Image (cartoon, rainbow over all chains, first blue to last red; front, side):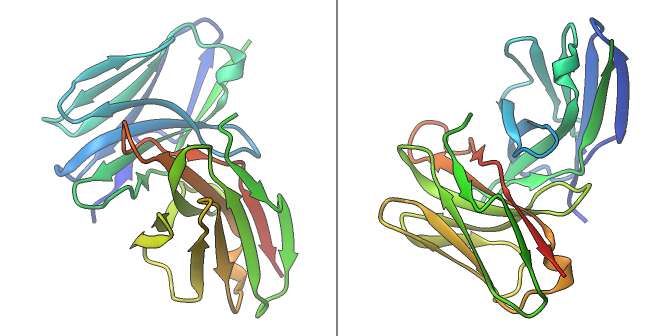
Amino acid sequence: GESVGLHLPTLSVQEGDNSIINCAYSNSASDYFIWYKQESGKGPQFIIDIRSNMDKRQGQRVTVLLNKTVKHLSLQIAATQPGDSAVYFCAENRVGSNYKLTFGKGTLLTVNP
Amino acid sequence: ETGVTQSPTHLIKTRGQQVTLRCSSQSGHNTVSWYQQALGQGPQFIFQYYREEENGRGNFPPRFSGLQFPNYSSELNVNALELDDSALYLCASSPGTGSPYEQYFGPGTRLTVT
């Protein structure tokens, strides 16, 4: 069925390295994607978003890449810090679904000092 | 912090009981969405309220109902609680203008059904 899924459930990196978290989606009608960070015991925190008419967007230490040809989304975190340790979710909004967000299962990022 | 608040933070209920969860949206936001997040899973959309009207619903039974008030705060009500209703319940608010899709989440209410 249609879903937003993640390639890897866990990712472990060394402090200072760059992290790449991947996400695949199956609905070509998806027009908007968001990455959220969720720390233990907290609600998801908005990181960065991208619309389907873009292929790259940069924020502070983060970059989101969108490849519509293969329906793939990635979140790149530069110079990963211990405070980046969390579960990362990609979410999509599909055309005609109003503001409903469809989330994947999440990737647990662990940053080792 | 997003400015979205939820109460209570934790709640324990018995199967068959009813529960009401509350959410105050971020200032200036007129849209509130509710999500259920089971342990180890991503949030699942329950429903959304826009200007006091339900504006979309996910695959949840009618015993999940909601309200939005004139100040845009919202309630989620769950009747006849089941063990599987144990989860983190999140509300998210959105602005009525600008980017229509950004949703800012509150800290959630952890519901345990025994």
